[in-house]
Length: 522
Image (cartoon, rainbow, N blue to C red):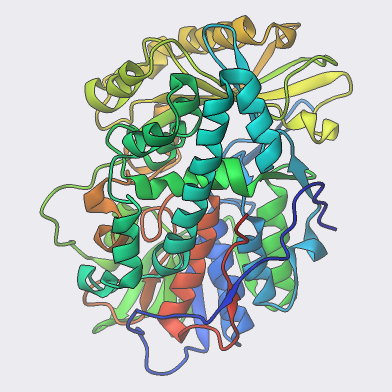
């Protein structure tokens, strides 16, 4: 059962499903292979099965989830990928394709506060999704004028989401010209194509508050000073729409999606890799696996990394410039003694440096001189994820990707992990008791997992890699293959990965006959 302890989601607007994309097939395929059981592949499988297709999902790992990975270490149940869940109604859209709801499969808890921001000067701010609670917190933190500015910024973020979501994030496009619309003009009018940090400064003068509403640019792989304001919709998701956590950890999401898909007839082949795609002219007619199987198919959904996608298709993309990968991250998992005074589920620890840290990792390709960290304590919401009397901590430090960085992770990794522990315990001393390092993944580790440029965040959302300029979810010269995942439209993140699966399904079958919801706007 879905548990939501504050706010409401009954105000979801119902809009007609829109399609601005050319279908890849004139008739609905009856047999489809989906390569990859990450969120995008699971979403695609659910939407396709809901439309009557016979779907087989091939996944090289032994469990579903893709980038939403997992590890079980010494009675700790660890999430190695995303830890922040927003807009669960988008996941509900995938379940609805099978006649189910998220509540049938998941117990979602509202995370309150959404996160706590801690600054180098010792100040702290709890970030609430409730407007009045957050306005009161901002007034106590920075004064009445800043509280008024926050409310105005909240209104602007809500309008940005209203204009942008259905027409841009929730749709795929065949060309830049197909994006010309009234919504595009409205987006220009409200400042969507200005710089993110400049727009936020229109509302907030306090530099600490500016960080709270712009640090999300790193999710898009671009410094706030260079990111377009259209990506401030991520700040809307974090600070307005609200943050959730599934009981059992983030892994519960792909597990639930896979279970619903399997109950609807989707076949899964775990521990199996696709080694080649058999072509007949412009069509893929079969997928070949490392187990020696040949799976005949009418169509394919590929959620693989772009280099692997192009290799499987024997395709060389037309590109004026090489793709630019997003920055990477070091993700360290710690166990420590549980404390009643421990911080909330999510904390952002901001270092003294701000502009410099972005320049370090995106320009100079070196470690942040004064790191800002994301600290997630999932045991704040579900204590069963750690042994009794222990807390589980997930600490993420942005880092240069393997393409621009020259960091010898084999040499520097252990000392950098120790610096991360020191930075966390300095700001959050209640977490410093009896620390044990459970698992660490750095850019070299991500590369070892097959992630291009050693980053889990795929392609950066620069202007030339956004919207209609991002690699499309179809490939020139191939008639029956749709792409899904972080490197295609709409981009990086949990909600967008789920949307990309739907968009891939629509490439093959057209939009669903029923209306689909846009997210609730608060």
